[in-house]
Length: 137
Image (cartoon, rainbow, N blue to C red; front, top):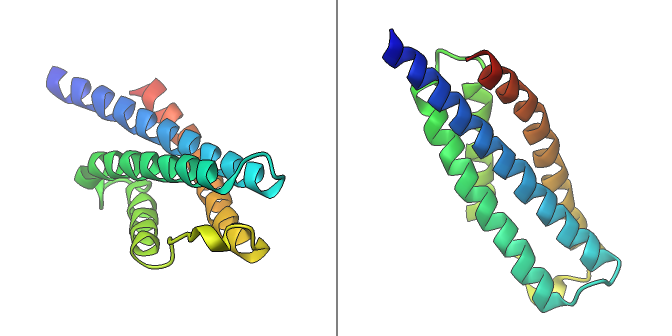
């Protein structure tokens, strides 16, 4: 019984940390897009900060997925997290590419902003649920 309780606490904390990282990295990507839009950064610095935020988001997304896998069909929150992870992986393999010569086109950075905003709000909602789970574990 003690092992199950310790496992639940550890899993809840890993999920909370992963979700916090995903929200922070998505916020950093949104900030870099806003800096590019308002001409506060150049293309090279934007690409460096945006790619760092994207890579951090994918690392935390993998940690979150690994922590959700044992509960995939037993917990209601695991399935939406898995579906979001598969959508993000499909996007990574397909339309994620950003070319430096197309950065300043409004439709290019707005496309990436829409995905980041969707992810950010999904992460915020999930963060509150994970926080409640961690508190009650």
